[in-house]
Length: 128
Image (tube, rainbow, N blue to C red; front, side, top):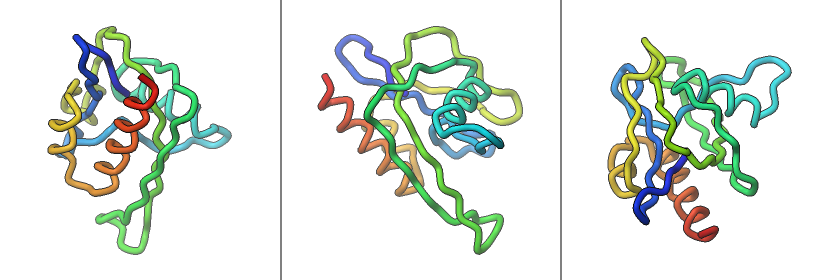
């Protein structure tokens, strides 16, 4: 998710309860499509129902540290945030940040998340 503020692109980043920074994400429920999952998870995690933009889809896959031999694949979409109040999900999300590209990139520890942000930034720049 991103927002346009005073000629600048800002990205919506969450700080998870344990301290890591990421994008809103979660598990797909039975019968859901990828886009339905994305909309539901954003609503559950930060209290906003996004309208997804056409043309952007990025994936990241990584091993779960807590479950050796198990990997997780996350599919990301883009939505333009319109500025309504966000409410982090208690017990799961510590805070929600709206940050410029370079600041957001500096917070991400995982290379896959950094790559998704880079892809999203390119996509947004190309559509403007």
